[in-house]
Amino acid sequence: MNKKEKAGRIQWNRMLKKLNPYTIKKGFRYLRHYGPKEFWIRLHERFEPEEVPYGPWYEAYVPDESELEKQRKHRFTYEPLISVAVPAFRTPETFLIQMMKSLLAQTYSNWELCIANGSPEDTVMKGILEEYMKKDSRIRVSELTENKGIAGNTNAALEMAEGEFVGLLDHDDLLAPNALYEVVKALEADRELDAVYTDEDKVTTELDEHFQPHLKPDFNLDLLRSNNYICHFFVVRRSVVKKAGGFRQEFDGAQDHDFIFRCVETARRVGHIPEILYHWRTHKASTADNPASKMYAFDAGKRAIEAHLERTDTEGVVTHTPDLGFFRVKYPVQGNPLVSIIIPNKDEKETLKDCIESIRKKTEYENYEIIIVENNSTTEEIFQYYKELSQDPRIRLLRWKKEFNYSAINNYGVSHARGEYLIFLNNDVKIITPGWIKEMLGVCQRPEVGAVGVKLIYPDNTIQHAGCVIGIGGIAGHMFVDMPANRTGYLHKASILQDMSAVTAACMMMKRTAFEEAGGFTEKLAVAFNDVDLCLKVRKNEKLIVYDPYVQLYHMESKTRGAEDSTEKVRRFQEEIEYMRCQWIDILKKGDPYYNKNLSLTKWNYSLRPLPGMGRKQ
Image (tube, rainbow, N blue to C red; front, top):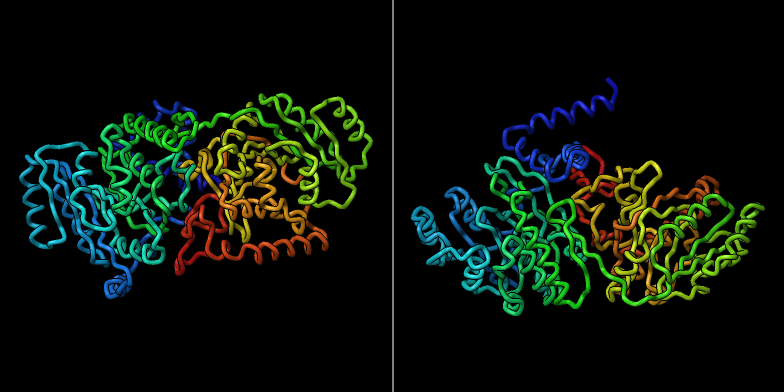
C-alpha cells in the first residue's frame, strides 16, 4: 500500500468512527443544503487529518497547577471588578453547576457572577442557584418573573452588573481558570482598551474532548462583517455598554453579533488575547454543532451587519454565503474614477496577449487605462504585438531601459499613470471574474482602505495566493498555497473578505493617495518582498489591506523571471531578506496581528504550531 492509499484509508476510518445516528442525520441536512458536489468537498475538508492534533496540543497548552497558583498570588496595579453576565433559561443541572464552578476556579478574584434566571417555574434550578449564592457572595441571581428571551434575559443580567467591565458567558459554557487573569493582564497593560476578546474552542457535552479551536486575529473589521469571529469571550467596559445600548430582541439568534458591532463602534480600542480561555459546549440542540437548525439566526446576522453599515454610513449589500453564518458585503462603486492598470513586461508575447485579452473580455468597468512598462525585450514578435496594442487608445507603452527592478519599474509606471486608483498586475495572469475592477474598486474606495488583493489560482485549480501572513517561512508567505481552489479552508478564510497585513502585487489595487503617502515601492527591494513592504507601509499609515476572494485570477508565478539560482540572484535575495528583517523587526518579533501566535509559521493552512516538548519542529 503506497502513502496516498494509506492516508486515504486512515481518513476513511476516521469518518467511520464519527458515524452515529445523529451524525448521519446531520450529514443528510448538509447534503440537502450544499448539494452533492459541495457536500463532498466539505466532507473531505472536515475529515482531513490534523497536522498537529488538537487534543494532545491542548493538554500540553493548558497551564498546570503551579502556574495557576502563581496567578492566584499575583497582585495587579489595576484590579477592576469584572461582572460576568449569564442569561439562564432551563439550564440542565450539571451544566449550571459546571458553569458556576468555572468562575469559582478563576485565579483572578475580583469578579461577580450576575445570573438572570428566566425559568421561574424551575424549582431545581432555583435551589441550585440559592445553594451557590450561599457558598460565595460573588454569585448573584436575579429571579425573573418570566422568560424574556435571550436578549431580555441578558439585559437583566447586565442591569445587575456593578463592575467596571462586563463579560458575556452562556449558561452552558465554561471559562478557563486563567480567563479573567489574562483579561485583567491585558487591561492593565493598555488602559485605553474598552473591549477585549479571547480565543475559544468547543467541548463535548461530557467535557471529555476539546476540539475545533478558534484562533483569532486581532481586531479585523472586514472579518467581523463576514462572520461574528469575536463571539466568545467578549469583555467590554460597562460605560461602553450603556452608550451602545443593551441587547436587542429583534436580533435574537445573532444578538451577540449586533451587540459586539455597537460596542466596537463606540470603543476607543479593542484588544485581543490570543489564548484559549472560553469553552463552547456543543450538544444536539446547539447551533455550534448544527448550524442548519437555526436559519433565523443567520437571517438575524445578516440584518445585524446591515444595521452596522447603516450606522457607520457605509453603503453595502449583505448576502448569505453557502456556508451559513458567513456573509458577503458587496460595496458599490462611487462615481466613475479612472483606474490605471500597470503591467511590467519583457518578451513573452503570448503570455501578455492572454492577459490583455482577459482584461478586455472580463472588464465591465469602462473607465480604465493600461500602462505596459516594457523592460528590455529582445524578440521581434513582442514589438509587433506592441504595434497592434498601440491602436487601442486605452493602452500606453512606456520603455524602461535600466536593469530589471520590479519596484522601480512600477514606480515609473505610476509616475505616468493618470488614475486615482492603481492596479499592479503581472503579465502572467488571466482574469477569471467578470466585474473584477468593480468589485475591487467598491472595497478600495472605502475611506479606511488603502489596498485590495485577490485570490490567485494556479492553472491546475489550486490556490497560489489567498492573502499574506508576516512571518510565514521567515519573512512572509501566501496562505493556502496548493489547496484545491474549490475548498474554503480553515474557518472559510480562503473564501471570505477580511483584512490582512499584506497581499501580493501580482494583482493589487491601491488608492493613489495611499501609494504616495507610503512613498511607493522601496527600490532597494528589486525582486522579493516589495509588495509586502509596500502593504506594511500603507498599514503603518493606518489604512487597511483587504483580501477579496470574490475576485479570482489564474497566475503562472514567476514564469518570465526564472529561478533564483545564480550567485548574484541568491546574494540579492539575502540582502532583501536582511532589509525586511531590519525594517520590520517589530512585526516579525511580535507576530502578524492578523494571524495568531498559536498557528504555524512553517505551514500555510492555519495548522497549529507545535508546542515545546511535543516532539515536532515548529
